[in-house]
Length: 338
Image (cartoon, rainbow, N blue to C red; front, side):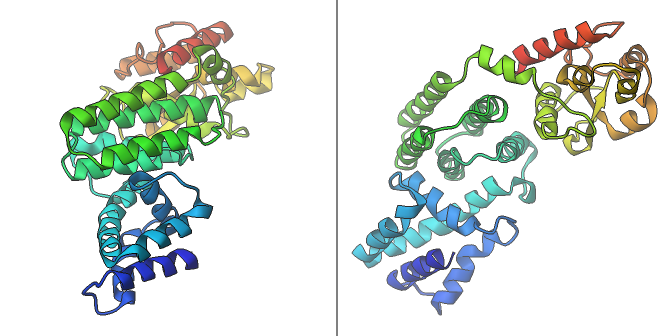
């Protein structure tokens, strides 16, 4: 962080700026990061900014590249400082969408950014930053932004969250090249070509359904096995959507309910069946804690039906519920989400 700070201060000093002092300019630049909990946010910002605008590099080599660029001319330093200040706002939106203001029409953007953060991957940061900047500058439409974020979100759900594959760096460099291309044009046709190109590359790199299903069927959530809880909640939430009749769409208020209750484990039922994602649904906390409790699966389904719960969307049309139904529903969920 000290290296990054010193480099940015050098940029400020070299830019012939009108600030009273480098310290004041520095404070203005990082003001947008105040509410972000990540300690190294300013470090990663500079890296992702650079590979979205200039060229792909590693964090280790970044300092030398930026230093050379800044020292070439005062004009370079001034332009860099102005561009950093503008991009910082979009970077904060990307890193901390829950702390930003969004219109009703932009709510899907917020959810996509939150979902990507929950996957704990950063490969896409350069392109997402470029996308947000392009939207801020009105070079892309809200529809284009939603569409691309949805594709990126789906790719990392399959690639990272479920199949847990690792990238050799090719994905990060792919995102970087498309980000640079996007940031250097405002031509509508050229922008669409860039978006189409990335969409095709993501499709090409998407793991097969067979790989996805194997890992998806392994998803388990019990009160004492919580490793996959966030991914399971995300997967089930994707089926809910943002506006479903009969279900609280406040995603933060949704909780995971076991159709066959966990109490059945004490009677000898297989815990892997009870914890399987095929035996899980999302309900609001009040329904989960007060109306369903440890009732039999058929009773729970009937209560949900009377409440207008979207049973078909959740593949819950059965009037009875046993181990075979759990496995069958797991595979249906897998196909729908893939």
